[in-house]
Amino acid sequence: MLSLPRKDSYRLTALMMLLIIIGVQWGFYYPYTSEFPNFINSTYTIHIHGALLMVWLGLLVLQPMLIYLKKAKLHRKIGKSAFVLGPLIILSMFFVTKDSYWRGVDVIPEIENLGFMALDIRGLFSFATFWALAMAYRKTPSAHMRYMIGTGILAIGPGVGRGILANFDVTPYVAFSITDVIDLLIVGTLLVIDLVKKNDYKPYLVIFLFLLVGKIFWQISGTSLWQNFAHAYAQLFY
Image 1 (cartoon, rainbow, N blue to C red):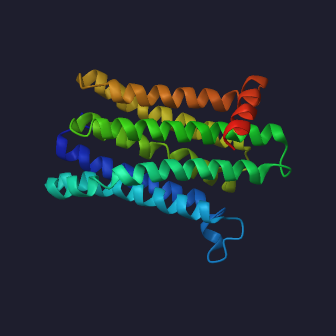
Image 2: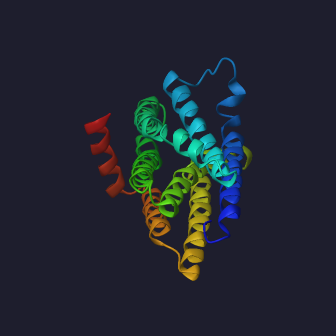
């Protein structure tokens, strides 16, 4: 986004994050929001996780707009919350994945339960990495902004993927494969723009590679290689 005139890049980043929020709300309406106020199939862990992520996505809309409006001091002050919010989200992601695994035991076939762990594990480690890099590069605005965008793009899979599942006659494998392609196209486009404009392309390259590896995890989630790894992971951490 920073390859555009700087003010436009902040505004377009905020718009992209707003569209991601809309996609997330669309995806989670049927399995989550529509259950309000009873939330029959949800746990406190899911509620906390969802609330933390929505606050995070809200910040990804607000923060670039503050820069656009020349409120840099307020941007930095609010940005300090990421040092607390990021670790809380990482912890919530771990507990949600653990809860998801145990809720699937004896309910769905083990091969499916272990396969779905590919989505959970890649999301956890990708978010943790992008957040850590964004914090490490907080004094380098271009890199910081790109890694923060990366954390937002990670929400497309869980959100839009569930929306595709709820509204179209497709399998989870197809739905999340589609969102994987969407993620790679978005980041790939931003990476190419940086390369053409001779901007610092390394952040989007890192994000692209993480997304690509995550896509491979999902594609091999039914193989003995992944199943054995996921089983060992669950035994060790869940």
